[in-house]
Length: 368
Image (cartoon, rainbow, N blue to C red; front, side, top):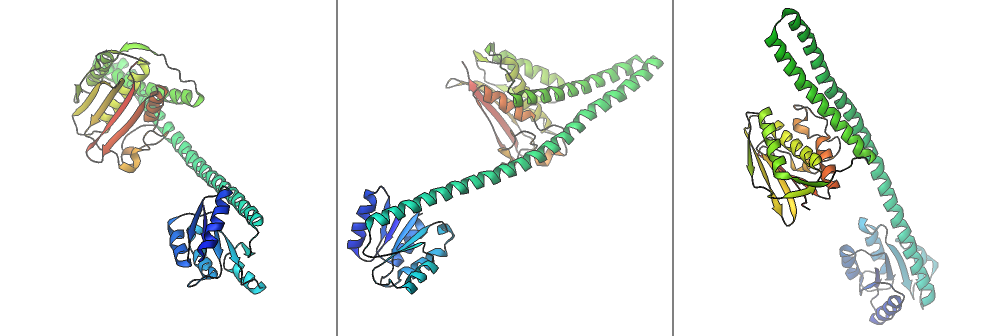
């Protein structure tokens, strides 16, 4: 938009009509004071400013405008019928003007200059956008590089822990075999199996992430009884965590069309997290059903909760919530995998949480 500033109404009207005919959006001000008020409220590509005005003259207005950070890219053209001497033209440029045109104005020349300033403005705007995008890309790559290094460190530790445990239990098993201690043998064998399951889960997550990154995560879409799947998962999870009461509310009441294994994987992950991040708690709530053609599932706990500023990041690759990350194991890719699975079902996944009061993770996908 262009701002025309002139204390003569006839000049404003005629110049406004010409420029609008040229396809430009025009705003007007009849004094320097009015112009400054409009500059504070609106953004202008160009200001065409009459020099000889009562009150604040054009030079004073230009100097005031140059002090505003929001107008640093705004071009100013001075118009003057009286002050045509070199010293006044020089003053115009020193006041922040990019051009100085004497009256009477050659309309064709003015239109050409206006078009040129618009073109320069657009080029500068695009350059600024490119610079901003480049800086953001550089920063993103630095975050990504840091996260990758952190992930490698965490992954190495997480994979090493169960391996070390299994190695220790195997040594104990050898001793128990030599002693003929069957009960101790069974106990060590069970603990070894638990550690091997952890190792298997970690490797499965890493493989899934690799598939996602390479675009090879395929979905096996078919109808299945989602209520039966939910009940089975809850039963298994309760057997593994007998101290937890998992309350189920609602049911789908119909088959849904989705990848059963992947939807089960999401549900297991959400339940596992709810239990993991609820130390000292004994209750988890699962709510499910069909609403407006969408199957939905919610998992709610009364655990640690997640700070608001971190809630938008929990589905990012390698991200781990800061407070509990030092207390609980994990690679920081479980929720990322969940979000990718739901996204590939063209669904939505999100979280609502309050620190100290718990979290509710919920997702929905088309039922058919």
